[in-house]
Structure formats: C-alpha cells, structure tokens
Length: 484
Image (tube, rainbow, N blue to C red):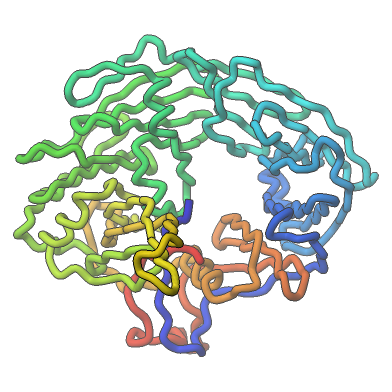
C-alpha cells in the first residue's frame, strides 16, 4: 500500500533542509530493487547502531557506535534456506550480538541466525509456528527483543511470541469472554473482526499517515502493554489492554460523540494515555479527547457544516493520487468530500504540543480502456486496472492545556525526510530510525553503490543570525502527498 506522506512544497531550488550526511559505505548489492533488503536498528542499551543490508547472496552487517562511527563490519553468505526469505526483524542479545529473523514465503517458518561480529561467524536454527497458526497479525521490536503477534485458527485468543537470547516464550491472551457487537447489536467473533479488518500497527513517537490511522483496528506497543483499539461500532471505541507480563486482558469502552444525524464514520487514536475520537457525517464534525484511565472527557468539539473550523492550522485539502492537492473553501465541502472516505485522526507529540491531522483516506481500483490505434470499436480493445487513492485532511496544533493554537509551521524531521526522498530518484531500500532528538535515514544509492546515512532534524537550516534560509513566502502549508 502506498503511504500518504506530509511534504512541504518547495519553490526555490536553493532551499536547504535540516539534514546532514553522517557517513557512507561502499556496497554493491546484486539487483537491489528485486533482491535487496535493508534494516537499521539501535541497541537500546549501548546505543550502538546496526545496519543489515542483504541481497540474494550476501548479508553485510555494519556496526556503529553511539556517535555513528563505524566500529565493526561482517559479510556473511545467505545460508539456505535463507535465500528467497524476507527479513522479518531483529533482536540484540545480552552479549551484544545481533540476531536476524528470516521468514518463509508462507510465514510458517522463521530461520533465526545469530551473528558474532568479533569472530565473524554465525549460528542458525529454525522455528516452526504451530500447524493451526492461521496468520501473523504484526511483528515488532521492543527492548532489544523481537515479538510476533499471531492468531490461531478457530480460536478466540491471540498468541504473543517473544524471542529473547535464543529462546522463545509464548503468551496467550484470551478474548473468549468479551462480546463484540456493531451499533445494531449484531454479535460476531474476534476472528471475524480481525480477519475482515486487519489490525494496523501504529508507530509510537512518530508520524502515522492517514492511510494507517483510518484503519478500524489498531495496535499500540507500550512498555509491558499492548493496546488494541477497535472502532467497528460507531457508537463506541472498544479497547483492550494486553498486559505482556501477566498475559491478562482488560476491556475498556469509550462512547463516541453523539451526533444529531446517524453516522457510521467514526474512529479513534491513542496517544500518551489519551484517546482521541472523531465522528463525521455530511452535516457535522465531532471530536473528543478522553483520559484513558478515568474515561473523563478532556475536550469536546462539535462543528456543523455551516460553521467555520477556527482551530485548523492549515486549509482543507483534497488530493487524488499524486495530483496536486486542491483547497476546499468551506467546512461543508470538506465534510461532503470526507463522507465517502474512511475517517481518521493522527496525533504526533513534538516537544510540548500535539500536532493533529484530521481527515479521511480511501484506496480503490480504477479501470482504463485501451481502444486500440485504428478503430474506436475494434476487437483489440483492452482493459487495465490500477490503484488510486483519495485523501482529505486538515491540521491543527494542541497545547498541553488542550487549547488549539495557531503556530507557524516548520517542517518536522519526518517531513524533511519525505521531501528528500521525493526529490532523489537514486534512493532505494530506505529505512528510518528515530533517535532521541533526530532521525536517521539509511538507504542504498543505486548510482554510487553506497549505503548512506543522513541525519534529519526538525525545521529549516538557519543562518548565523537565527533566521531560516527559507522565508515564509517560499513555502506552503503541509500537503499530503504519496511517496513516489
């Protein structure tokens, strides 16, 4: 799926963003667009930085210290059955050596390989999921460990596989005692809910575009907890708190804002112990913020189609595919365009304020007909299909007192990364890691045949007097673009 990205339109070629080349490393990957895989990772204990770059023959591991100077490297052959496998994730053992997890095509087996950089050796073993494993919901890294959340056939529970120091621990989260209903009171199972509406993993402390946040079911990984939010019922958000230490499941329900007109277009977003809920129809825009522990409403907004949304920090934008965004002039036009989309909200905390994107997204299949060159009605007519997307959005900024504020927009690090990617065609296998106060983009340059790391920070590069090199007249408000 193509991702909807925030970009800043730049009208001057001389504009420089807050980015710095950290280092480069010669790397000749065999057919990187077809065979290449790349993963960047930080050791959360030592803050060493790892790069894993592979093609169908070799794996290169680069180890950098916390100052991002190269300290070790290791090239290993891709061992059978490692060929034709996808790099699923990583973990780092107590002894400081990395382990990679290579998944088979059917995701039924993982080849686990631990790499010893000092001795330039590796050891592998295979892990088979149980025969009744239906599918993998999500994978993630936490505290240098690798996790797989999976679903078994015909079972109303989820299994969490934790891979740590060469061992696998499995924990079961039982959902059999919890009811699942839509707004009409119709019952269904957990299995059917997540089969038809897959759970989307949300990246904490990073920007999540609307194509992710408009998903009905979402997953948030916290310290020793996994939060699952289900918005299949337009009247409420059903939330489950999975305690990773005790394998217990706690249910919470948060009522959605009550609309004057029946509406099934609602969703939510969890951020820092708060639940942000949105509900829309042709006539209304409703938004609530609730405290996750108490359920207390911290802020509530209701806007009609004839009102002006005064708290927005950008115009209303409509974008189809990669076409130039169009500006919608009124709340009514915004709500009309939003009515045919999956609605969502995305929240990113940057320093003390929350940057919020409200909007909707849809991906659909369009068709085109080739009528041939000679005859409009000849027998050579052919039909092709392609994927199109549509996004409607606007932005706002919320301060710690839950008040919306007007704040001059400067690009975030993630904006700068997406702009760089959109203007550099030699970049492939890009991978982003967010560190303490900046982000690192690692990628393969197909022309120079190098692995390159760039550091990106918020804002523009500024002159010695503190003024940004680019003035206000040289940039527009944030638009939603798709990654090329």
